[in-house]
Amino acid sequence: MSRASGWPADLGRRRLIMGILNVTPDSFSDGGLFGAAEEAVRHGLALEAEGADILDIGGESTRPGHRPVPADEEQARILPAIRALAPRLAVPISVDTYKAATARAALEAGARIVNDVWGLQRDPDIASVAAAHGAPVIVMHNREVADPALDILDEMRRFFDRSLAIARRAGIPDRDIALDPGIGFGKSPAQHLEALRRLPELKALGFPILVGASRKSLLGRIAGRETAPRDRLHGSVAAHVLAATLGADILRVHDVAPHVEALRVVDAVLGGA
Image (cartoon, rainbow, N blue to C red; front, side, top):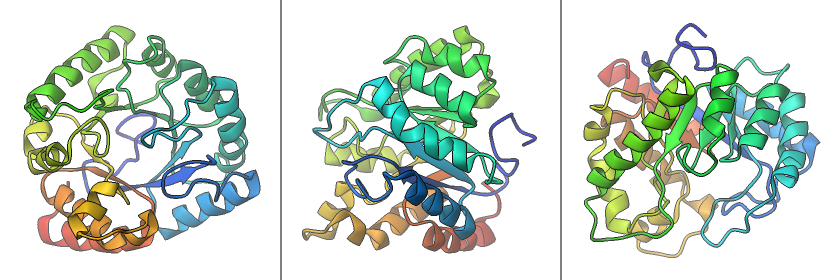
């Protein structure tokens, strides 16, 4: 882990795959599938075997209309999986949470990265927790309500300016920060597409970029027909290959093996990230 304490050493050399492990009863795509610790461990090991470079474990659904989960309940869901997987994985675990208490417990249990869907802006202590553990952070753009009138890139720049100021005040070095445009969060359908189209402008900010469009409803709308989340593989791969060509460094996905194969083609043609 030469780049930083929690990033895989290959970050910046090739596109990385973050495999999703939701230990929730209500996530939009795989809720209820991996709630038991044994099932979560089995799936986490399978994602690594398929080629995941990071394993992202979350205990609270962030789908539209989700029920917020208290920190103790969130921790009861994720900590058994983290404790069981951390000593068995060769890849780092990231914890998908916006709560400082959950981030602290997860890092103490063996997670190495904090993935915050509110960009360090929902819980004022989460940046300090990450800094104290030397943990990199993934800062995602989000809004409570979409505003189609916004220039979404200007909005994201302002949001990230606030997040970066929080991170720096807490002592998180820039090398330990990645940015996520937040596909599926707080944007109109047109703004989601614009955020992807304008990834080079985000890349120009000088930070690694994570994109997570896996199985999102946007892909179903583009397909022009009703699709269940698990039936959006082709759209997911297309969106992530496009994102990789536009500057994404990390792709957050449910289906690891097909994305690994697709991104090997991207890396062969375009070279490193």
